[in-house]
Length: 470
Image (cartoon, rainbow, N blue to C red; front, top):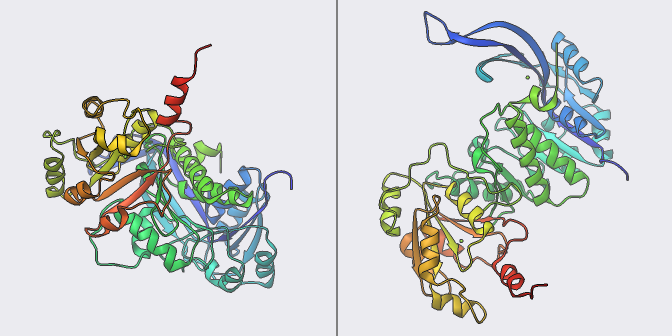
């Protein structure tokens, strides 16, 4: 096959409207923005947006969605005609419309109209699912996926973007892509406190088992995306924090990831690239800017080494030299304690890991091997940097709140005393190679894997340094 693989999108189509205009003042009688000179701009919404984005990627795309014969349906078909082949399902009621009123590039109100739901599945729609080389379900809770559930179960989709009001993904779906705010209503309650991202990791693992999915990728906004195969999750970090319009970013994520899976990419690659595309979509302040559409809008990997501060994160504690005092202070304030590790030569990969780890919580305690521990674990000549130097460099990093030293081969005993909410490890660890994972479960902690920057390692640096100069 040459070119991008074709894709069938199954889901609930909407018509989105923007009452775009200028917002330069507040109303005198109530403190709300006044939108002057606004115009009505229409664009595809719901699964229609997902299909449109797939088509913009250069793919042949067919959309199966419930549509009627009302004016909104006719407008949506006009918008899609140049890009998307529409295979309609009967709709009860009018096609749903969502009208957003933005001010200063941010929505201040949304007006909904139309309660249409897919009424039944046609034989043509069933045949299209059976014959499609790749299927993406974009469920917005209005019945299309439910009407086709039997044929989707017999032919599991590559990707499924779920909705709390919709049904579960078909068993065997390769990648499910919920947003964090949509995960909590979907995940089974386990009676544990809702902490973040440990709670998101537990929820994602529970959903992998509940849905019988190969993987679940939960988007965490500015903190990245959490990819779970049912055990220790991998965090896909964001390159930089953007504050643009995020409407449609989830559709961009699903469209990109599904397309890559259709082309034969691995799940991890599809999730990472999809999240980067979604971040860029939001950075461009939403649909119109990102697409050019005009209607009638011990960790950083491929994303780079940008810091990821949580918007509500507490400032670093003043008593930053005592790791146990730092952890207790954050815990008392109901914050999240993150523990990471660092061994010998501190390089760009480590710095990226540490900055990302700090963005996961309210304090970061770095667990460092003593010189004796490094000598026991590494080859002769290690450590290159003595403990005092390594600790001093780490404490100079703004993302590090405290440093704790341990003499054993693993920090298990130190972690048991520190009791962090999140334990971060470099992504070169396999899910079965996390000896502290069971220990963390004793107090509800969570191990999270973070990818390294490609080409950065202490061993490689030492080997290059040992090469004779030419």
